[in-house]
Every structure is written in C-alpha cells, then in structure tokens.
Amino acid sequence: MSPTQNVPPANAPAPETPGRRRWRTVDIIVASVLGVAFGVLFAAWNNFVYPTVSAPLTSTPFSPAIGAIWLMPAVLGALVIRRPGAALYTEIVAATTSMLFGSAWGMAVFMSGLWQGLGAELIFALLAYRRWGAGAALFAGAGAGLAMGINQAIVSVPEFSLDWKAVYVASAVAAGLVAGILSWMLARALARTGALAPFASGRAQHEI
Image (tube, rainbow, N blue to C red):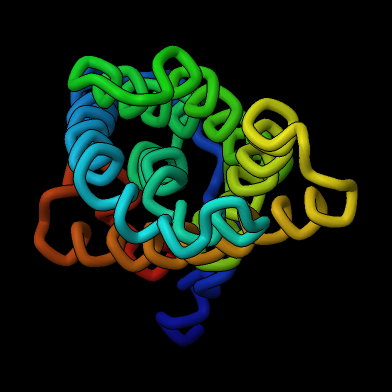
C-alpha cells in the first residue's frame, strides 16, 4: 500500500472526533482576541474611512458592496476555532468592541453583528462544522452578507423600492463573497506563521 493512500483528499470533511465541538480556554481567548482586533478595525473604518469611501454610493443600493470588513470576523473566527458558535461569538465581540469607541449607528451595530454572525454560523452548521475550505468560507461569507443585506434593507433603507432592495441585498452578498475569500486567505497566512498550532486549522493547512 502506498503511504499516500492514507492521506485524505484536500476537500475531505474534517473527521468527527470526541470533544471536537467543545470549547477550550484557548478557543475563547483566541476568538476574543480576533473579535477585539476586528472591533478596533471596525471603529477606525466606521469613524474615519467609511464616511469618505461610501460618499459616492450614498442613497444608492450599492453601498453594502464596500462592507466586506464587517463580515470577516464571523468567517475567520469559525475557520480558526472550528467549533459551533465561533462565527457568532467572534462577530458579536467585534461589533461590541467597536461600539465602545463610539458609532453613529449606536445599538444598531450590535444587532448588525448579531445577524451577520448568525448568517455565517448557519452555513457552517449546515456543513455540520466539518468543511473549512475556500468553498465553505465563500458560502459563509455569502450567508453573512445575505443576513446583513436583509437586515439593513429593512432597518436602514425602508424607503427603497423592492427592486432597489433586491440590488441592495445582492450587493451585500457580493461583499460577503469578498469577505469569505479574504478570511480564508488570512486563515492560511496565520497558519503558515505557526500562530494556529494549538488548533486543527493550524495542523491541517490543506483544509483551510
């Protein structure tokens, strides 16, 4: 038998092992660090960058297309931690942290984080928390974007026509796809540094 016959294909689902879904202390710490780091980025983006870059898109249904950064914590957190709840937890920590720096959107930031995290979490749940490749990241990003688009179409732009709301949601999904691939690339880059050694994502780079 060739030694390579025991190597699973790159797109094979992660094996189900006892305790794989139970959170460890290091999982909580790393997910929290990722969430806080993205929360600080959110604060800088929301208060200093977004008002400028979004100006040409104001009052158009394309404004969500530049919101990929808001969707990344959910996808990246799940790709790194690989446990149920990681997408939702990391996104909520990021949203809550950004609120501490002040935001023009107030508590709506938290609710956006909640829906975006749930959107990504649902995709990983549908994949039984066993798929962590680029395809899973893209679908999770799209799920987070879809949740963001629907939530904001109702809350932020209720005056839009149905056609414009459809474009608005599609723009958010496009941002989610960008967030998905960027998160997957970032997870691979982190794994290569050895920073993810305590995680399955760091021990199986070919899966992420």
